[in-house]
View: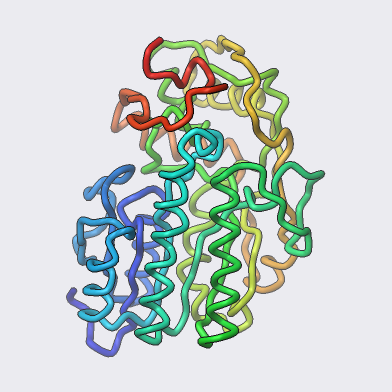
Length: 338
């Protein structure tokens, strides 16, 4: 750390990952002294600036978490570490809850014990489940997958910690975020990255079902800056915010847009339908009024930015998840042995 001692000290979990590394960049611009905790299961140490202090480890390591809080006396915690594979979470329930729920409990405990000023948590619109969109913050959550259940449980735990211990928090529910530094070699999540990786390798694009599922694909630059600066906005404290694009597109439309941006021939291989919400996008009125956000990035412009980065770094292999807990009803394309 090279900043002045009076600057705020912030912990960013998952700070070597996609969204986390962009939040780190924004915090450094704001003058924060940043500590990153990441197990590099999905991120890369090269993703973030050397101005941040990096510690290799997991939020499930209670001892390590407590040691970092004791050493650095964090003002703020930005909790972005998660294994965010909604569909796969049905088949890795224990792994999902250990990492996405119990690991979060370690951070909340430490934040209470060390009197953190604000705990910023990236949840997900997966907490809403399969209901008719657009979802607002007043929509009762009803998650349909273990990932969404874990995220909503953390939200509830933060409310409990606020009521009993006075821990301030801000909850963001982003959705379908894409952009540079995304791990395109993960076949279970981040559809834009999956499509770009397949096209780079000369493969057909694989789509579960008919491809008419609709999402509001959101560029990283419309998310990370707001998450970083949120602790300076007192109106945001102890509130939840949907954050993302207002442009809604089908998966088929996304596939066509990516093929066009990459100047590749589009050939689609439709796979069996998997268990997922057919349509998922949210209302952002509350976020827009609180953060006074600027006009968002269009899908085409965002994909061009992402492809510029992807083209520079090349295609990636897509390894299978190594510890599937339930094989029953697992999509064939996700099975270790094809």
